[in-house]
Image 1 (cartoon, rainbow, N blue to C red):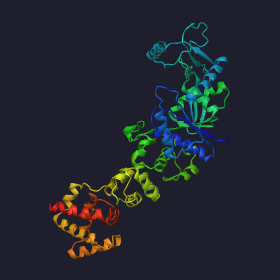
Image 2 (cartoon, helix red, strand yellow; image 1 turned 90 degrees about the vertical axis):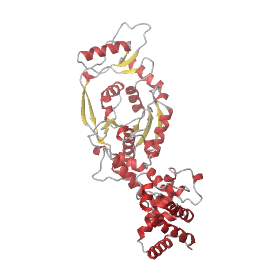
Image 3 (spheres, rainbow, N blue to C red; image 1 turned 60 degrees about the horizontal axis):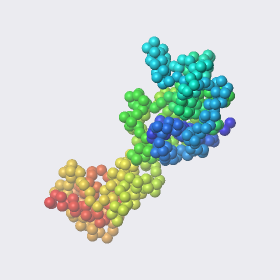
Image 4 (cartoon, helix red, strand yellow; image 1 turned 135 degrees about the horizontal axis):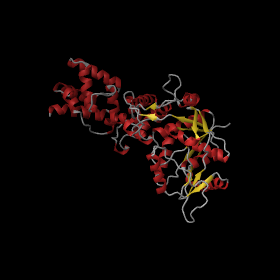
Length: 465
């Protein structure tokens, strides 16, 4: 059997963490088995589905590297197929027309709840022989009323549903549009889907869909219902837990490999291993190691992984990624450094590209703002004299290299009878405006001789002024 899986988002918003994990699990399962990954856009909700959402989903999947083999198919392009299948069930007596109005259904729902019963359709139009001549109707599936529906779930295990708890599902609304559960079955059959991997919030849809598979004489795919993602407070994951869309994580300076690694470990494990290459994930992923308990979203774990991947990123690529978070190139000073060099010097401390861009921003502007607390502590009258002397010597030095700068610093410190820190820390504040940076000689070289001398003199002049 050739494995065929699908990711089928509804384009009613951005691609968020839960959807991205579902997309990843399907992609890994397909790649592990040498199968096919199908992308299907379930856009039958015309009021909420938007083209912008579709594009954002496609962009998010592409950024994560979750390439699809077929699609994207769109349900709105398959309406004739769905209506033909509805008619097939009507002709075979497995579906029926329902003339109950929304008001009637709501009144019965309230009556059931008042009586302490689970509200469900009472089937009164099933077999009705006196339909109104001009009434609008929906079409309902005649669900089995006896027995059980058994699902051998690849994550949950054996799940049994009592058919007496099922009502007759609407498969075609009175406005002529088909419903979610019906479209899903028709699509999965037409697209020859062998495994359905989805969140366990869809588990209760499974017995409804199982009845439709049986009615059409189709073999059901294997189901794997993955537990939901919760916040640290055990509530369902939301933006207040720090989770947001894939596009937003990209904008916050996360690397795609960090998010992929994090999502893979969000409910799946392979021993105690935490960091996986994409190739390792493909090799090791299986549904047998997907947990049965809800996964807990941990923003600190994600940012830890991101810091790791920033350190491991190839030099040129990291520079390109950083450049996207810097001001436009046309605004940079002529002697601004290559972003790859700046990234290399700052990557050990950066957790996100946004943090890195903030820390390197001093190299891409002419004048900086100096933190007043840092200035008060380090730009003292004694430091001002040292900085002024240092600026003069650097300007006149034959070479502007790390070795030459170190020699110059050591010579000046010895002459003035001070420790290296008395020169290095005031210089750091003068050059970057802050007290934390990479090695001071790296900062000098990234900034360049012209601006380094200018900033040293400006810092010395603060005290003199």
